[in-house]
Image 1 (cartoon, each protein chain N blue to C red):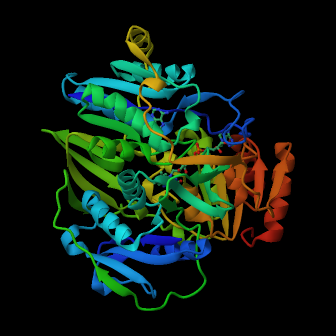
Image 2 (image 1 turned 180 degrees about the horizontal axis):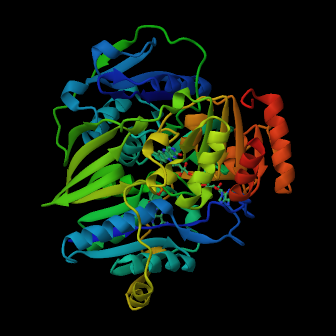
Image 3 (image 1 turned 90 degrees about the vertical axis):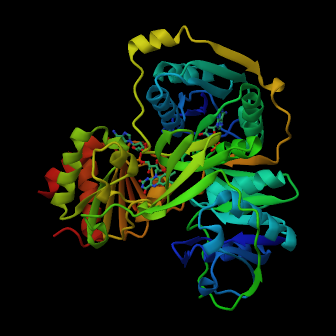
Length: 258
Length: 304
Ligand SMILES: Cc1cc2nc3c(=O)[nH]c(=O)nc-3n(C[C@H](O)[C@H](O)[C@H](O)COP(=O)(O)OP(=O)(O)OC[C@H]3O[C@@H](n4cnc5c(N)ncnc54)[C@H](O)[C@@H]3O)c2cc1C
Ligand SMILES: Nc1ncnc2c1ncn2[C@@H]1O[C@H](COP(=O)(O)O)[C@@H](O)[C@H]1O
């Protein structure tokens, strides 16, 4: 079995974001990057499946982006993926989900994967499109928002999360794409020996121009902070003072203090 | 502009989000037609055309077949945009339709702005204006972002649609009910919720102590539940409970839309967060910028 995992590197969401010079995306300077949270569940599930099948499957981890995305690839390799594919793109933010999906599809077509794991969405763009688009372009079965995954004899039993805590169960035949949701598993921390081992694993480097065949079908016109709805009070300063201030407000504005 | 609105139907019922689609189309000033894989006994109250396919035949979750039916209705209607709710049904089906049409998709729309659609990004901390560049567009709207105060009324004109092509590499097995709730947060007057910013499981009792001191219950954001720090029955949000206490205290919670959806009806919201820009600030009456593990014990001590 050949498995692909797609990971995106995104900024730490606790960062302060400000528009870049183009006004259509964030300024990258000063931001710390990490693996998209949903993609960590994807990597973990792929590695768990590999282990379940006696390490037979080969797991490739792919990321599209500038050189910094090698950090995310290396983390996935240290978690147990076998090889990396860095699709070199200095400006992936300028590509829409359709183009990102078509790049992944171009790469996948040459490789003959049976199963592809993606996150359900990226934390920075949050389009929740790329995984499903890849499945459609490849003609694979697809299920989104997995909180449960089981595999036996070419069939995946997927537990999808629906609203209000209800789950939907579906069976998919390979080849398939699944998109991973919070709570699917608990991603492992790479151990030091595995980090060392990962250094020896192969990372292909492919210029994005070799794989990009599609024009964008959507574009970002502007990136900006939300309008503050206002009304709220912001309290800052020494903890002791903050407690007094909040206590006063709660006494005045609510009926919960007796 | 003509919009085809894709309604949702689950466990034999039409979902209320249908009316959010109508509200969105009205805001857009679009001509409307609806699409439903459901039944004659659960039609939306509206006076538009409804393209109706039979859920008993085509299933409630069968995206490969539902895609074909949506495409058929979109073609018959010559729709310029096909609109879904950004829900487990919508985000699963919309990109399949977009791929078939090579149409640009804009996901989780929160507003309509000049020449494009406003969407959240960077965990709701920022916004983008997105413009579809294709002739036709696929849109998903954020649940709760568009609503109308009018009571829905009218009787739709039903156009039946069907397909003989039911081939799919996927088989829907069924639903699994939500976990039983042993804490009923919906009745609590005060809820103090722990988020990932609390740091670790050992810190949960500190948050619980504040809840006790205020005579309330402990709530939690999802990552805290997923990590096993707090039981699922305490989760607030779209996949947990929807609450409306007199006081909601969010401790180390960023304010993702799925969390806000469960608590924004609270009378008074206090957020404790070290990040002044955290989106929870948009719904908080008071945002205390502080380290939660320093502030919470101090507040609890003051209350005792
Ligand atoms: C389909 C779907 C359904 C979902 N359903 C739900 C749901 O029902 N409920 C839910 O909650 N989420 C749900 N989520 C997840 C949601 O998108 C967010 O990931 C989640 O709410 C984030 O939880 P959090 O705020 O605790 O963590 P984070 O987003 O990681 O935020 C942590 C916050 O703590 C602050 N912080 C960190 N350290 C400190 C400190 N020492 N002192 C003070 N502040 C600190 C940070 O500034 C940050 O704002 C769902 C997601 C999806 C895709
Ligand atoms: N630049 C990228 N490189 C690799 N995978 C990506 C990239 N962008 C998106 N993906 C994958 O597609 C998923 C959904 O992304 P999105 O459609 O942007 O929300 C992510 O969780 C990743 O698994």
